[in-house]
Length: 362
Image (cartoon, rainbow, N blue to C red; front, side, top):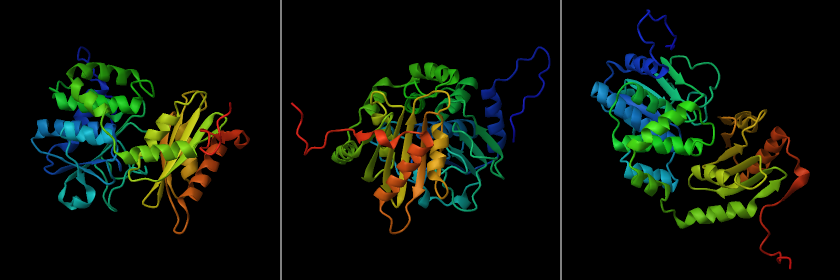
């Protein structure tokens, strides 16, 4: 189903894109009794926020209660706190009988992306996402609400709620605000005027005390062990910084460390990997400038057997580690591809931190 703009009779206001999206979504959902909302593999705040907001929308309009499913894990302390404080209930995919559901909505990912993991033969009815497309629309998808001009899927969904007069509960507003904050780095990364407008209108509706608790969530000791390992192994290659976190319990740590290293003065790129369940997870951050596209770099690194993609300034890739191969070797290969794709010189490589066995200079 397309969102083509039809001629509007004179004197009748033109529907906004958010209103048209909402109406198109209603047409697909109407009559379905057992909807399922499928989040990206390892749900981040944007996926959690937009997913629970869509659930609220469908429940209010049709009086049916969608199940929210996911396939990976939620490991980051802030994300777990978000679920706990905002009462976001999601179900592991292995507990879901997909044949039981008569509607599947994929949120914050899309078919063809490595973060979209539906059972074989299951085709989503609706796709709601802000990431750049992964080729032609998937056959069988009735409605594609994919718009890469948005910095967050939470902005796209929040705009639909606001444009169509929904009363937005405090916890839903808080979830959407946090989703926008994290995916746009507080509106400093890939944020459009639409993101800014939705955030400005939702922020007064959010519970700011809960938002603060989520942002300052306590972390386990293992978090600092992984962080120390990442800093110890980090290398600076001119204007890029890279590291490998080794075996990690939760893949979302990779993105967190990539954000941290990207703060290093003078860096144009950061590239971080970690291995989990024989998959090398990689996160890329880049300065927003002409000619830079982290999504293209991610796809180049992941080819031919992995998957990758993203925006101009942030991207991710997942690369299967062949049986018998060492994750550190997979990281070295990925770094070589990263440096080649970004034209960063290996000859400028040096450690980020001083090795502990080297005495400090007087």
